[in-house]
Amino acid sequence: MKPPILTIIMLTVISGTMIVMTTSHWLMVWIGFEMNLLAIIPILMKKYNPRAMEAATKYFLTQATASMLLMMGIIINLLHSGQWTVSKDLNPMASIMMTTALAVKLGLAPFHFWVPEVTQGISLSSGLILLTWQKIAPLSILYQISPTINPNLLLAMAIMSVMIGGWGGLNQTQLRKIMAYSSIAHMGWTTAIMMYSPTMMILNLTIYIIMTLTTFMLLMYNSTTTTLSLSQTWNKTPLITSLILLLMMSLGGLPPLSGFIPKWMIIQELTKNEMIMMPTLLAMTALLNLYFYMRLTYTTALTMFPSNNCMKMKWRFKCTKKMIFLPPLIVMSTMLLPLTPMLSVLD
Image (cartoon, rainbow, N blue to C red; front, side, top):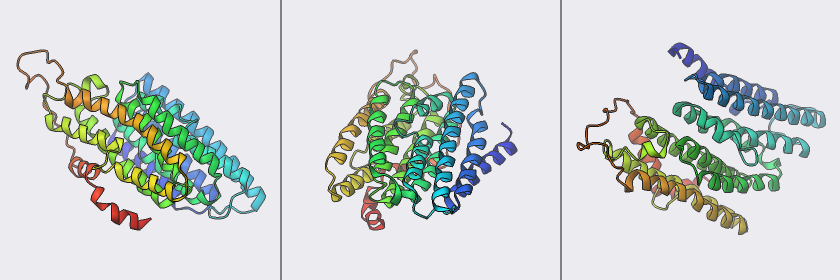
């Protein structure tokens, strides 16, 4: 894709999300979602092949269905209240329809089926945008309507997402599918805390985006899409290999790393609200995610893949990709735990 065209399309994607985040009019929210959807399609098909075409079609159909549901909810709310303002209390029926529409857009279970399929069919750079930037707009609307959302509906979807995100990724060897299931699980954690502390949801989303961004950039640096190709990186880039190990453990939420902050604070917040079963279930199903991250670290950093020649250092070309944001991103993905007291004050 030519740079000027890519720039225009990216600007449309960004402005679509910005409109959704900043407007107070339901029609403008819907228009922002549509702008974002129509502009992201060519980005998904950047490397044109039948697989990318199929992925983009699946994405378009699910997102268009979600937009239709959202518009239906907006119209029901309009008929009951006679106004278009986002901040007003929603009609219960409209609230359920909007929550469902936004869950489809986010890929929350039981509307998660498109996420692994679409992510697997597109390039790593498109997958990066899909699993990070595309989560911001729906979550900003959920944040604004959180006082009127049906808590049982949202918590049921959250716990299902964390479970499916854990179980679905167990048997995968494709890294993009693993990242997609990881995204479903993280969205489950994000929506679980929505009802009790919307600020905590923003913290969780921020740390999730930083960690996912870093993971995808490392995978793009190595040009790896499968566990097998990732296991061959040790003899060319041993430092990157050890960084992937740290990053995977952070994604799994192990204590000394950044990924532990949101899990710790969400469990603490849910317990404060006298919920015992919910954080227990979340913590137990997080172990499933941790298992497949640990499996990745095992194949990458803890085993030596047999090399196919005697000279082990020169059998792959040197990587010339410039990843200038990688060092600060790696630091943020692993070393934010000391900032926890400051972050807990923000809540």
